[in-house]
Image (cartoon, rainbow, N blue to C red; front, side, top):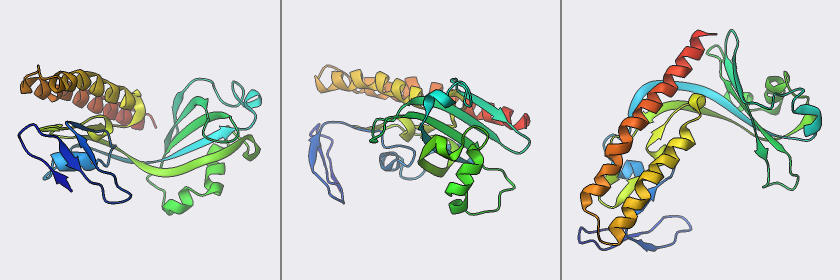
Length: 239
């Protein structure tokens, strides 16, 4: 539930599960692609779609023997490759620090072929993961962190502000990873917005300064989302 007014008083928000109450003058919803805050700001239509919808499986592994694998079985550089029926991305990342063992993290993204007729559970199964990774890794080379099926969308929220509530990052715009711009655009959102909110809190900023957040960021975000989609479409033509 939410209590609000237009007098400049803070809003009080109560969650529903294991909730806590808080008082704040402004809210920035950085709550991801399924943003609740975006739906609050845009109750009728919470995104504009560029009609790009692709199913992929993301696989995260932690290497057990980095010295034997990196630079030999796996390139130290991120790369994208296409085959006759699919495409995939290999991203060598940093180390895993949230596990007892500290190993190199590798992300694999595979497009699910249009001809695939199995279930989501079968796609995420250890047996299928092992098959997908067999070009690079043997089962003894890694520990599986996760395997999950998700969708690449190209979406942009039509409205990024409602009075003192804002959205940023994936809550504003979602895109496939082909340009590596998802996180970058979210950082740019916050870099544009934080000092404007700070100026408003201190009392010296006109309300139009807060409106300039979407005015300055929307066009760039839309172009980046569209460019990411076009790169994905180009990759499909190369299959």
